[in-house]
Image 1 (cartoon, rainbow, N blue to C red):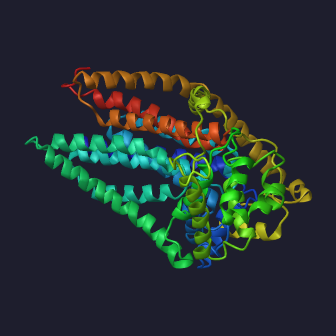
Image 2: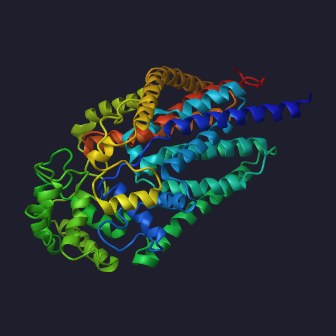
Image 3: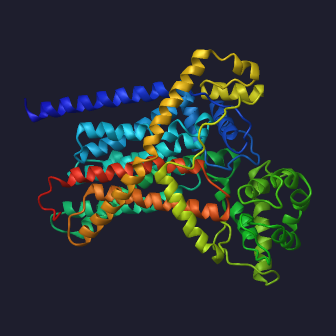
Length: 557
């Protein structure tokens, strides 16, 4: 039997194993239900936007909730509905697809079938997909980890194609489209930038190797061309969303929170210097009083913030507005005085607040800091030591698979007929019963099935809480050794670049979460699940690197 026939048989066996493992995973999560609740800034918002899209109304009427977040997840919900897939199933299929793309890259690195199937299994049984509370809500974290992993998987294939000299323009364009979608799912997408820098550098190295005349200019041109192709896909996604927002609401932006008008107003408030400051309180009462005195526009919000709905609702029983809630309270307050009915007048009002505060700052009427950041709270040097501690703790939680909110006692869905109807028909998934008598009448076989699967998942969880942390340390040490060898003249491989890009993403995301925990959030949980598949991918890419370097006789290893 020739090598071609052997490769065909091996590929068929691999795909059979992938299909079998995928069917097992789908069977295990089959009892999962959608939990209906009223969360106007999260899942209720995404369902409402998806419903408006399906009814041909884009994101619905303009108000304080419109454009407050990217529409990437709602687009996915609407697409799932249009193709007739229940949301829970489509989310899982997306994750399985991302795992497969990354595993195919490992296959091209030289990993054998039996190890490839182990790698695929390690990725798909990641505990966040079944043991993490937002998975029962239509929540952005239902797809964000999958899209994050897909970006690395596509980048890996692009580098491998480039190394072999195969055409890959379609992959570059697809990579740009996925990156554009990723950028509109959650607001902290900037964490991917260090990883993209590593990809670009490795692509340049591979192009330079292919230029036998050693013309660096040719390699640079090909790298720039590749970046432009990807940027085209990225721009198409973002421009399409921004244009649709402009066409519907008159504002050309993908996310109003990042628009010049909102940044002008919120950034103006953040630059006000105060005598008193408190962690987690970016715009305290002292700062607001100063703003009331110098900004007639902001003065109109005084009643709302200090005595009205804002103080009664958004302080949540605390002494002041915490960073996690203040932007939403700010938008809600502006709505309460008659704005957020149309974008034009609202943005004029926001711009006026920023201009009035800036004018007072520039004239020396009030003490202000520079506009070094228009969305993040001021950093205090007293937090430096705390930041190092939080960063280390965050990294530990990544690799220990701990810290996310696990399954606990499940209440029923909210008893609201309109919400129940919207969730049911938009997601096309099973909806958790909403009254005690309905919960009690759930068939016993269904309860037993959930208990049996949770018990099985609990046993798998034990493995994830013990093995990855050990393997991560080994892989990190191995990567450090590879970096040293490369600097000593060893040939850099695609697996080295992928491992380096993954670890860059892990540290970048940990840094962002550290800043959030120090300045804005008392704790995090759901944000951790983005990194669980990335941590596993890092370990697997390092293992695959051992296979990739094995036949390289010219390497100094």
